[in-house]
Image (cartoon, rainbow, N blue to C red):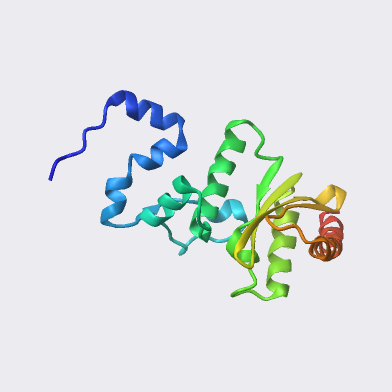
Length: 181
């Protein structure tokens, strides 16, 4: 088998471009998934035993952009966005909600609300990004606690879903504000 040659200029370019960087590890991913080091505490969750693996199909989903991203990819995206917010001195502005902790499967509504209330009260960020899966579509909610406002990036916008979400969030957000006092 012929060994792949990677030019130093290609590596330097890849370091500035996350997609190119992913492409440089495809040959390793063909053999087995890569476990990423991560600190899930920035989601407000204990990370002692939560592994994060990225596989070849995951990378192809990102690069191809034509299939639904799995939760590992969404977590990876959130970690990357957190890194960018730290690098740009915006770490106290933007917070990220751990996507698996707010999914209906495996969590009760009480658990979801408790996680969000605790994390938002303890971290005190101005804006939270909350990736959420609804059916087979990912949605990105932007939550602004001080304004009692969730903004949703719906793939298929449905009016009554936004109304229900807004009503549910207002109650949660007010309890967060009270807990902060």
